[in-house]
Image 1 (cartoon, rainbow, N blue to C red):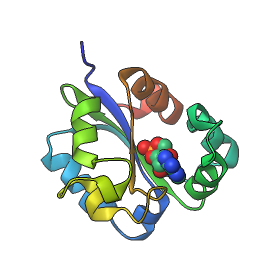
Image 2 (image 1 turned 90 degrees about the vertical axis):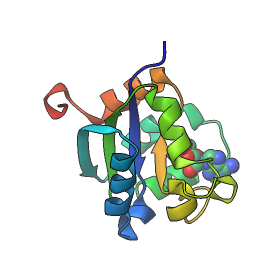
Image 3 (image 1 turned 120 degrees about the vertical axis):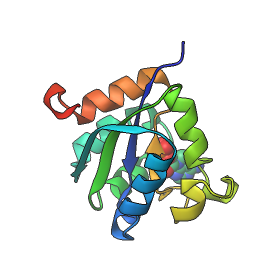
Image 4 (image 1 turned 180 degrees about the vertical axis):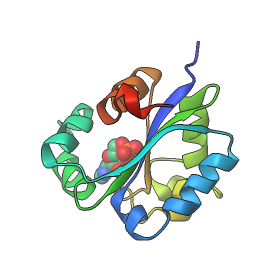
Length: 139
Ligand code: CMP
């Protein structure tokens, strides 16, 4: 059965470009409940751990460099079939391939700076939200 939580992170350029408000608004309008939310700047070690599944990829070091370049906004989101529904809302990883009206189509600068991260599975949604939030930070 599909899970009802996903984890998302608004990435540095989208935060710097002042898109945090519009992105949260789109998430809200799409019917997700925000169960946890915070702005943090990740250390290199934290970013390496967060993106550990990609450590063998050629873009890994650049991705870690970028994600630590400024604050990010992490959030735990609830909706039925959350992972799949959220991935529809954000669009394809590469914004050039994202559908019109998706968050990445509207707010991404590039494949690396693709505005938001969204969990790719129920299992990773749990791992990523446990990485970001303590029990006391979830509502
Ligand atoms: P995200 O959803 O945060 O998950 C991993 C990230 O790696 C992805 O979004 C992109 O920002 C980045 N990424 C994926 N593929 C590539 C690629 N081919 N080149 C550069 N960055 C990539």
